Image (cartoon, rainbow, N blue to C red):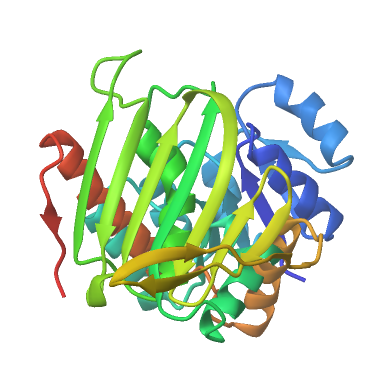
Length: 326
């Protein structure tokens, strides 16, 4: 089994440490602060903590790294890890710039290394079931997708709410529609810190006319993580907080040339209760062993960053529509 070093012991780093240790793959944790040793001893007894990132990257006994560091450090750390011959799992977003993400994808291909991005929701059993239902045609033609990711707190100074929260939702929308948008526009407000948006609304137009609407905020008093997919036959909703996935058999009748809503049944869709991050970590280890392309590889991460980059440009231009290339 591959031996993995985790960089970072913060909010998400501790979860990677816990899961990779449980899977028997954690060899080292990289963190400068001395207090991290006590924390790691609780999460992963017996695993050494190193402050020397360069020495860890140079260690031939370490075959892969998992990066849970601030987003602005991703490009440099991923680049160094790939150049050192390591396979890499990096938390989303892959980078904060589309050209940097593209450079890392090219570098991974040139070095023959695995580059995987931690879009954890892609490994959520409810999301996997959503994709199955959409691709099986259960919803009919998908007309629009709505995704809300709202909560109070965890304010950031290095990145805005768009880059902090929306990578989840952009990935979901691209997965549901199986395409990339042709137009993106975004608006938001910076209320706490100048130039750092605390909320954002992103609208996307896709080939064929499908639409998507995202709302992210860290200034919302109610915590919400919800996805709605509306199709020509049925709609689907996923309430992550309640752990519920539902099909809504609602229809439309036409009377005297006017649409009339028809209230159908709501059916709960069962799905496995496995921890998404454990599945993600296992997938990373499987891809290393089999030298396989991850489901959330660097190219998928690049597609998400490209949409976020377009949304950021629109945000800075007061909601101007940004058209993406073919």
